[in-house]
Image (cartoon, rainbow, N blue to C red):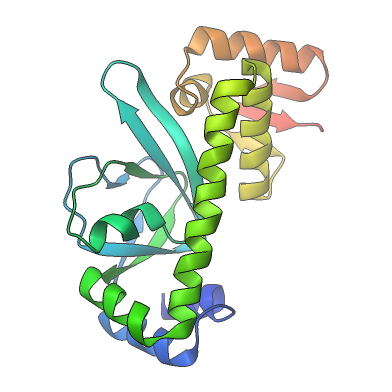
Amino acid sequence: MHDLLRSKYSDVLDTNILDSIEEVAKYKRFQRGEVILDIGQTIHFIPLVLSGAVKVMREDVDKGELLLYYLSGGDTCTMTATCCTHNRISAIRVIADSQSEIAFVPNNYFSLWLAENESWRNFILQSYSMRLDEMIQAVDSLAFSNMEERVLNYLIQKMKLEDDRILTITHSEIASDLNSSRVVISRVLKKLESDEKIVLLRNEIRILI
């Protein structure tokens, strides 16, 4: 996994910090659907995604889950970074969206490197900015877009993330990510198919646009 670390992060992190990460990080592989971090856990690390894709979810006791953003190779979750600097519990759930490999940096090194290493500091600040933009987009979509627009934007986002026009996903999974019902999502998908924007297959969706 050391090779993955350098291939994904060498453009943004200098050699010194990459050497340090290799020394202290713990590496783990997750299968699709596996929970990486759950709501209520105390956060002692910051994750660096080496391969695959993970999704970051927010949960409401009464209204279910809502997808905030995705992370792929070369990304980190700055919501966990915010929590780990104060040993706070997690307010998010992080789930592997595909088989993923992650390097976990202990939080004491995270804080130390912020003060000592410019490339690490710039990387974290840039990540904060990107994740904030993505969360604003998620809120805007929820507040201002109709369900057809939300579903289509969701599918396009996943297509770009996976670099594949054929998505292996169920209607129930989409409903969960978008905090909707399977019946509503199925109806919207059929409408998108009739508009020739997608083709529905068995547990797969082909994106045409």
